[in-house]
Image 1 (cartoon, one colour):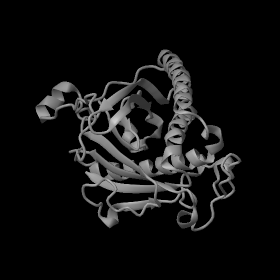
Image 2 (tube, one colour):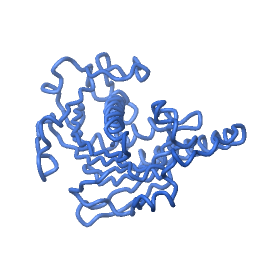
Image 3 (cartoon, one colour):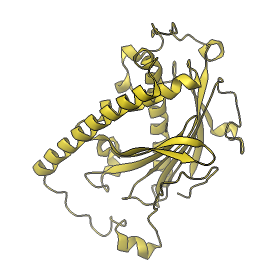
Length: 303
C-alpha cells in the first residue's frame, strides 16, 4: 500500500469552497464525459452521521478505459469502470474507489478543509504524515499535462470580477487573503503480483494531476459559482448529472451495437472470475452505505 498526503491551497475560504467544490466537480465531470467515457451518477442522497452530522452520499461509475496505459489495457474489459463512493460531511469527506474486475484494487481519499496555508502537520488529528510523504501542490506553478491547459484557467493572468482576487503571483500562498488548504490523505493499493508497485505509482501520479487540475478550475471558475446558495448549486449538480448520464448511456448503447465483442480472455490471463478468486482465497469487497470509520487502513484514496 502506498500512502501520501497532498496539500492544495486556494485563495478562498472553506465556506466559499463548499459551493465551489460542488460546482467544479459537476462541471468537470460533464466536460470529461464523451465518447462513451466519463462519470455516471448512480445515486446522490442526503445522509447523516452520529459524529460528522448531516452530509451527502454519492455513488458514481467512472468509465475510463482509454485513460489506462497500454500495458494495463491488455487485460481489462472493453467497458471498464471504477466505482466511486463519497461521503461528504463538509469540511470533512471520505472517498473510496473500487473495481469489481480487480477486487484487490482500492483507493481511499480522506479530506479535511482548513482556513490556513497548508502548515498544519496533523490536521486529521490522529498521527502526522511523515514529511517525506507530504506533497505541497501549487495551483500556480506546478506542471500538469499540457492537454489540460486553458488560457481562461491560467491563474497567473486570472482575475475575479466578483471577488477582486487574482492574478496569483510568486509567493501567493504566504500573502493571499483569504487562504485555505485542502488536505488529502491518499492511500492506494493494487495487490496484483508483478504489477503492484508500478500501478500504485501510476495511480498516485494521476491522482496528483487530477487534484491539481480540479483545484485550478475551482479557482478559475470563481465568478461562475460565487454567490450561489447550497440549494442552487445542488440544482445545478442535478441538472448536469441528468445530462451526463443520458449522454453516457446513449453513447455506450450505440458503441455496443456497432463494435464486435472482445474475444474471451484465456485462463492464463483472467484470474478475476468468481471461481478463480475463490480458489486463490480472494474475497470481493462489498462496500456498505456507511462511511468507513476514521482512521482506517486498507489492505490493498479525491475530492
